[in-house]
Amino acid sequence: MQTVSRSIRLSARRALPTAVLTRKNHTQNSPQQTQQPEPSIRTTSFGYKTVPEESKESLVKNVFDSVASSYDLMNDASSLGVHRLWKDTFVSGLKPGRKGAVRCIDVAGGTGDIALRILDHARENYADRESSVEVVDINAQMLKEGFRRFKKTMYHNTPQISFHEANAQALPEAQFTDNTYDLYTIAFGIRNCTSIPAVLKEAHRVLKPGGTFACLEFSKVNNPLLSSLYDQYSFSMIPLLGTILAGDRDSYQYLVESIRKFPSQPDFCKMIQEAGFATGEEHDGGAWTDLWGGIACVHKGVKV
Ligand SMILES: C[S@@+](CC[C@H](N)C(=O)[O-])C[C@H]1O[C@@H](n2cnc3c(N)ncnc32)[C@H](O)[C@@H]1O
Image (cartoon, rainbow, N blue to C red; front, top):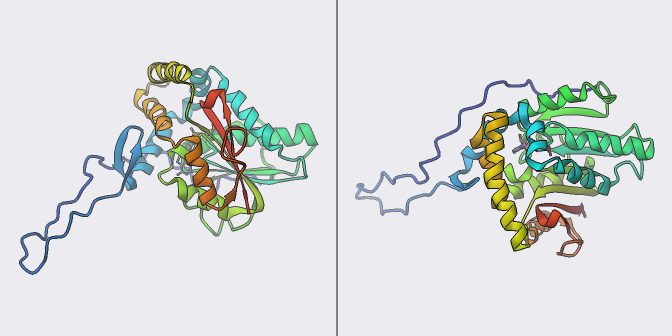
């Protein structure tokens, strides 16, 4: 049965204040106590801003609450449709269904773009109607768009698709049990998470031994000319399109900035290895495959 596993919340949580990054030490006047260094609050990036770690999740949630209804349109407009090609390449490279039905989890799955491609690929290429995808996202609005979209497909109301509201960094263990999935996918999602190692640790936990971790994400462009053209395009056009099509410049400014803060291909590869995955050799065509000169990139690892 198709499910949305938690009730969908309609209101965005308010973002926490981002300005206060250190706490005052209020014990300094006490004669009994030696002065301690000021305990600092752990911080992380939210685009180009530095924010307390604890507030990033709600800030990201606000972004996707705001963009959910225009997300698919904006994706097409801002990438001139290229995100579809990247997603096609990503999924066809995984060959879901080739060796029989697979149980997949698509994390930060949003409106279900990857899930739909996985199920279509398995059915069209291998006549597989047994493979299934559990779409997981922290944002109920994005899931709601995905659920609505799947209603128009043959997968609706079948065991092949389900939607679940959960945090990639802490998947509820009772629901997402250890050693369960053959394939874990995450597309354009991991850079929005506060702790990449926590996401990778969870991916490793829920995959079966021999299962595949696959990530599609914006990455580092190595060619200086392409990099400069890409920067000019993304920092001027994407926030502008966000204003025109979605009435929301700030969210799209964040999305562009968050891309630039994401680790380089070799650094992200190391993180995947440190989480316990085996990868190919550390170069393009090995552990990762650059798409369009590194604008996007596919990383894969196998749980050993
Ligand atoms: C850019 S969208 C990508 C959606 C979809 N995978 C795609 O490729 O079209 C990023 C998604 O990540 C989700 N997300 C952000 N932080 C998350 C977290 N900690 N856990 C789960 N999902 C998260 C957002 O809600 C959003 O739906």
